[in-house]
Image (cartoon, rainbow, N blue to C red):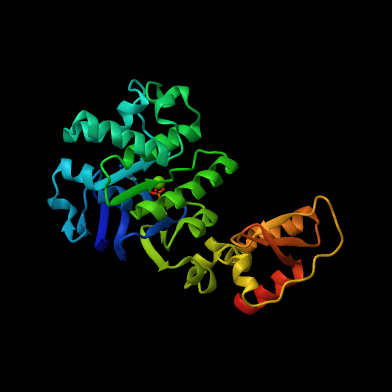
Length: 320
Ligand SMILES: Nc1ncnc2c1ncn2[C@@H]1O[C@H](COP(=O)(O)OP(=O)(O)O)[C@@H](O)[C@H]1O
Ligand SMILES: [Mg+2]
């Protein structure tokens, strides 16, 4: 668990970057720090691993004041991933991933096993990349290595500062999904900076939305979308709050309440989706493909179809 207690950061004499911020992050949760550029997200994150000093207040990680941790404990307990991955250009991929274990003096076998495990976890072949250098990899591959490196010593806490911000939208979406899968396995407590509301909704168990260093709202994505507590949050979340909320519901949720349509016609290109598809994606396929029906499959077995009207009905019943 991570606890912020009345934390303030003042740069120099007067730049108040973070202003009396308090919140708690339960173990195993992802909290996304969201807000416009300059609102204090990065500063808030970097006080946790003491890359920035805390002017006032306290940050606790699993009950321990971060100010009482020595450098080597900080590195072991807190992984850090940044946008341009920060890989060491002159070190091989294996050396990069094993940077912290090297510091900790792990033996060779333990390091090699850990390297193999982590590379498999992030979807890269351990042997293929072992001796290569960061600049020989694509942006997406480098970002995966950055994640593996941050997880090397199995830290309970991960800090991620716009980790996927430099990737193009398709790769970014894929890595987000993969990362959420990894998280199901590893269950880290994660602080994740983003300026993108869609990313925040997708990745966050909770969202902390900041303005000028102040914490404006701390809520689950669905609460934030349903009940923005201020004009600022309402505007930041955007016009189509209802549509965004749809991404938090799946076809399975709809199927649980509404009977499915019979499948009409034969259409060769008729699109099929699995029940774990979120309703926002389902709706956008319906709208973009101009297909009037989507065939719904549950574990590859066809169970019926949905139309735009079905999504609308669901929307009106659950999301105002
Ligand atoms: N090292 C620094 N020295 C002085 N001011 C800083 C420093 N780092 C950030 N700031 C200021 O603190 C505020 C918050 O910055 P930052 O935490 O980087 O915001 P964000 O990550 O949300 O874009 C901004 O006004 C920024 O200019
Ligand atoms: Mg930042």
